[in-house]
Length: 226
Image (cartoon, rainbow, N blue to C red):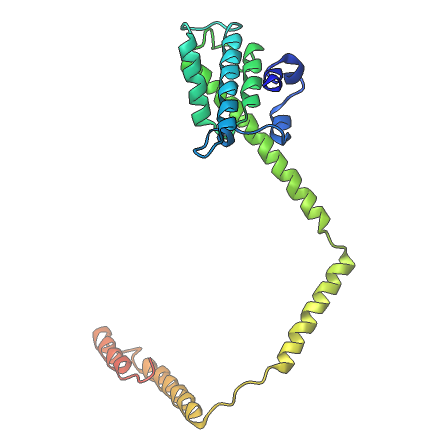
């Protein structure tokens, strides 16, 4: 557990940002240490993490003016709330957050003294920094992936040429099934009926609307194809 305590120190945190903590595979998230199927060892590790997070918070609050007296119990409750609301953070994120609080990073000219809601709003500000780090990492990964599959103009032309050659080959191999005499007769009758319908609709142009609608309905009902 000595290594866990070192991560709360200035020697460790002075080199940390949300980006470095996010990309460090040795650091684990709160969720991975607090789900239902954790091992006894993971449960013990999370217990020590919570003790260290509470100590870091108490230390940070000593550097800011508070509107209320943050008791030890309130600090423990705040850490528990943090673990529930931000399970994808790593405990080291919370240490860095506390260091930022000590340095007054989130304090504005309106924060003459802070209370519980204000402190929680500062957590949300750090969370936004984490989201930006995640998006920046995704953008970088997407760029690297796209540059790896980038094609030259010549290779693109070769791919298109191969594609159209395959299409032409398939067309040559395609042999349409012959249409039966019965199907041909149906197509002929349908074409003839459509032609008569067009001629009939012309005759309705100058007719009374109600009468024309009645005749058109009769015609549609007599349609053997629609």
